[in-house]
Image 1 (tube, rainbow, N blue to C red):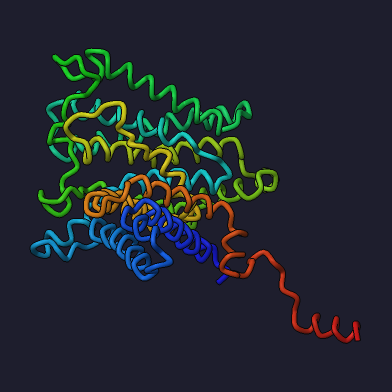
Image 2: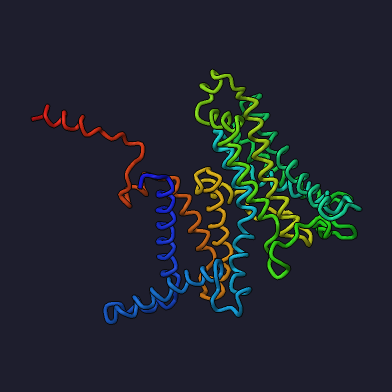
Length: 392
């Protein structure tokens, strides 16, 4: 009961409860029944059950399984959409989580994704004559390199000058945003030939990530890359000497320096790896999700959502995987909830924000659910007995 994941589950439950209250207040049937609550209170409770139950059942049908669809292939389509939305969240969340484990706050996921998307997109439609597979691999590597270089700038400034990585990464987000806007508006760079719109040409098939379960589903091989990234980060942190150095720097930089670890160089390396992981998310957006040409909104807010995923996952690779799938379910099911029940999709965003709020305040969650505090040192039974005898 004192495990951090128990607190995360409690935070999700509290966020869902608050979301239920908001659903009730925004439902017209509940509002109408509440007007004569003291005359017929049962009508209000029935309306509450219909509104809240209908909303979350629609969320389930849009994110996991839709029993109303015809055929098993159509019934499991919501799950594939959830995994498709989760793909960039997982890899970008891993980049943020890895930096967290090293004591760094990587707030530059947006900029790293934009630069990675620009690099992967330029290789995808700017390099021709390559066969399928080689072209895709080269574009993915370009995206990883773009994200790594952009995050590495913050790492070098942190290591060499002591500049705070939060300020640097936030400023790099804006630089990347306007730099991409310039590329998209300049013929010969990223702008589609013969067009005046700030949009790239379509990604050629030779560079696209192929469909994972067939053409009828949107899920692509980027999800396999995300799973591979989870395994890689787990191995890096728990089975490699470099990962030990990262964790040591994050736990206590001074002690790590005394132990012989080059803290500045470790800072640069962790930001390079973190940026490369975010770069996988940018590449998967261009090569798998948006293949008809992208604009300045290619990051789709994923760079900032990755911070939420990393926090909810406890900066643990497997936790980030679970959190990414959860938020992918919110994204996939929110649309269905709005379409079938008329519930504003913004409520889903509120629930996500509340999860972060409660995750950031674990004492509050423990107090509400009366969970034990893992930091509290328990007095041994023998010591308690001696204390009672002394008091007597």
